[in-house]
Length: 78
Image (tube, rainbow, N blue to C red; front, side, top):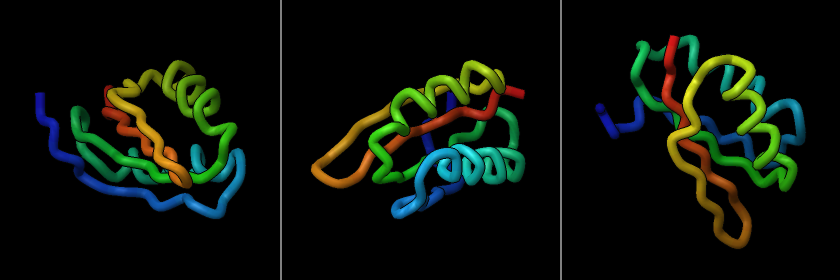
């Protein structure tokens, strides 16, 4: 599987549901199997991203956080 990120979404400064809306917009523009990386500073994003992936059928490949930013990598599955 390819591990290179096809596109990045900077959703810092946006609150729920905007990070997942931006992810949805971005994931439609990449090929099936490609990765989208999302950056957000919304603390509620951890639950939101996992739920969005489950509800839409995409795969949450990785997530990490530093002092200010949460980073999610999502693989387009369909």
